Amino acid sequence: MNRPQKEMHFVQRLGWLRAAVLGANDGIISTASLIVGVASAAASAESVLVAGVAGLVGGAMSMAAGEYVSVSSQSDTERADLARERQELKQDPAFEREELARIYVQRGLELPLAREVARQLMAKDALGAHARDELGLSDISMARPLQAAMASAASFSVGAAAPLALVLFSPTKWLVPIVFAGSLLFLAALGVIGARVGGAGILRPTIRVTFWGALAMAVTAGIGAALGTVV
Image (cartoon, rainbow, N blue to C red; front, side):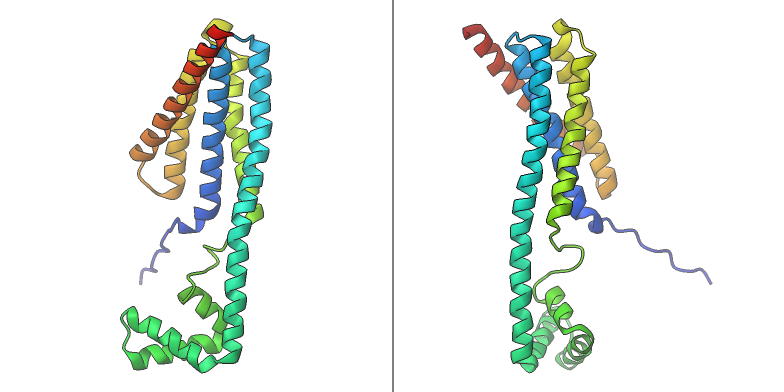
């Protein structure tokens, strides 16, 4: 008899994948835009490099702090809901069991079976059953502030390092077009990697990320050129 193959799902990766893709995407776009904008203002290569490094450090810290604060707020809400549910289970377990059974009825079970399922699940882990089926919380979806902060900061730094590397190896007069084109290639690669890791299609994420990256760099290049002319 052939043993059934284990199914592969990608939803378990959503927590860190979202933070990592967002961080790398922001690192490439913001740093490349900063470099292109400063270079378009006719700044020296040294000034462009310093601006890029400052953008990398400041952006990585900002991403880490922002992710930690926002995900911590989500985590606080989740803990408060769980504490409230734990108290309700102590005060009126019969009502909570019936509430859980009604949820299963809405999902298609007949009432007697729904009540039996609720009884057995609550006998094993009442809070876990209510967290999962009433509140929609699970190990996969639970907020992890530190993980999100570290993933965002690390991925931002990796993303920002890519256009910075181009500055180091580009002639001054070709710096803007090289950083522009190279950063679009990095963004396209990021779109492909993110889609592959998440098990999604490749074309749409790649087009989406390169379009917005090109727009951001074009706008900052125009502003930099205008300010450079005025100043």
